[in-house]
Length: 252
Image (tube, rainbow, N blue to C red; front, side):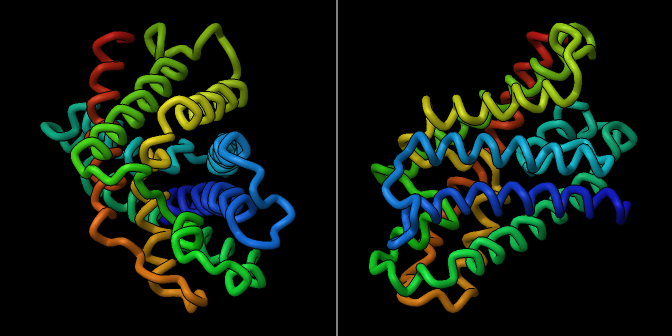
């Protein structure tokens, strides 16, 4: 169990390092990547997913690196009614805890990588945006729905890639290629559905770095916007479960 949690920790650490790292490069002053735009951010996050999942899988893990995926897999396996199915509630909670620890570590590494750029950036909103998501138009109900839809699409796509055809991979492709399709799926979600909220679609990706933002001595960082923080946590969890249930109904 301890080794399983370490695989989740390192995999999501890579995800946050590369994902939050590309945001920092685009947003922070005097970065060579400054102002390179939304397409760079969404592509960077897609690659972050690719290498985060690959890292987890290469270490022998399942490559979830997302509590929304972990919880959805547990819930859709009927583990709610039979603790023996899907590893049980305790295993799910421990895996989610490991994912959050990995998110903390990745966020700290991003802070250190861009250590010279925090004081060069005056806008506290840009500093927070490196670590966590925020709405383009603040409307909690609408923002919640956006996160539900985006994460439901993620789980629907992931289940389609890995379990369509009664448990076989799509078109007989290898695991490595399937991970690549997942990365493209995340890139597509970011391009198509990321505009309203910044597409958290991962509770640990948002809440973990948000906590680190609150803790670290970032010059002029401002508030961590805790009043919004529930949206990118509960929205992905609800959306993930709905997407997994829909995928089971369609693909299995």
